[in-house]
Length: 385
Image 1 (tube, one colour):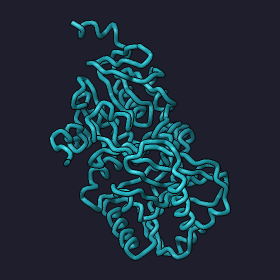
Image 2 (tube, rainbow, N blue to C red; image 1 turned 135 degrees about the vertical axis):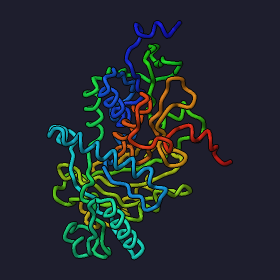
Image 3 (cartoon, helix red, strand yellow; image 1 turned 30 degrees about the vertical axis):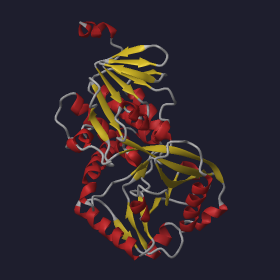
Image 4 (tube, helix red, strand yellow; image 1 turned 135 degrees about the horizontal axis):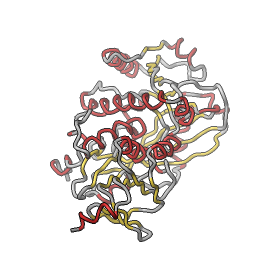
């Protein structure tokens, strides 16, 4: 029987497809369980959607009960992030970690009310958050426009540089890296585009949007985004700045949207987002949408006009059909598992995703309730025509 020959043919206990932040987190967690890991990645480690992210570590609130699932996932993951970051000072340096905090900016009375409700939610959870007056906001971030009504300050949010973290986690996992593309799956084997075949006890697909090649049509949806970064201008901005209007526009599915989202990077660069183009998976810059995004940034931070842009680029967020990631057994692939569909929360939720997936695949008790993330939920509830 083929199963009897597996021990002598096995390349690793777990074969992970995808070397982004999710795949690297899974590799690290399996290694922590004493399993050997092989990672298949044709591109750069920490590339793809990982390289196109802002690296914002943020607490997701649950003002809407529908958000409770991703709120629980984000909060658990942030605990695991802190465990890793505090484990060694070298981790914080390598990750370019900063506890910069987030300022959620209120431009009108409706957004100020939202800021107050978010503050109350944070306090009920025992989490730090404070409402800043217009005067306090101007003192905290002098470059912001002066007609804002205030902001919610979430001091414990942070930022990291995800590509370096992904590379570090693969080192911690002592992963064997195969620079190729997976083109076929059969039982415990993975066929690569260079003709090699890898054997393991299980396969984990963490390829972001590319995972749709192994899934029924419509389970994953691309959401293209633009980013821009300035030259170094130290000391201009201290916090992650996000307009509260972002929360409304991020869930629109029938139009392209732009919102103000800006992050200070080490050395004084400013990373500017964000945009969403639903259903777009190309990597070409859209000049008109990029202009709209930059105009929105100038609207909130007029002083940006004095700064020089270094470069602009795009990335594609892998979103699931219902907005929740797919974490669990592949519905049709024997010994196959999935971790994808995180949209814009892949960095924040990477470690809790890996923890949950490893617990499920090894038959362990789970820290979080797994049902909302199980991929087979889409088979039980087909998409509407």
